[in-house]
Length: 147
Image (cartoon, rainbow, N blue to C red):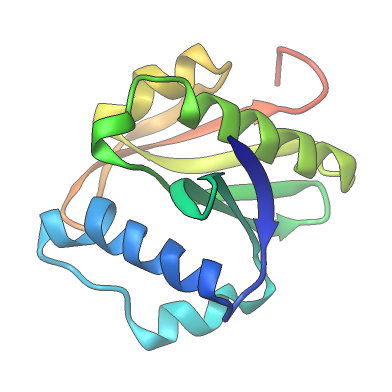
């Protein structure tokens, strides 16, 4: 498995869009808008590949000079639970740390909070609804186990 940063607008990016649509949006009856996609130009886009096949993806968006937000984490349904998401998360954390960020935050789907907690993230605040489903804000320091 190869973990890498991908470029906006490339063939790999188009694979990322399809994976995100299939896993994150279509099950909710939603689609990514052109406006949302335009905002991704400056984001750090990452994916896990087996040869040329994308297995998982995510992105990091700068919130401020010390904080990035993890977004659009998706793993192919039939590969979930096999460590691919964990490997991609560790890659994203390392990239963020290497670029000087101190903390990662996210809006985690309620059904995924257990996965993120195992990775050292903690819930901050109350449950809220986003894209029609329950979410929690979660965060993790990139330099210690505490915030």
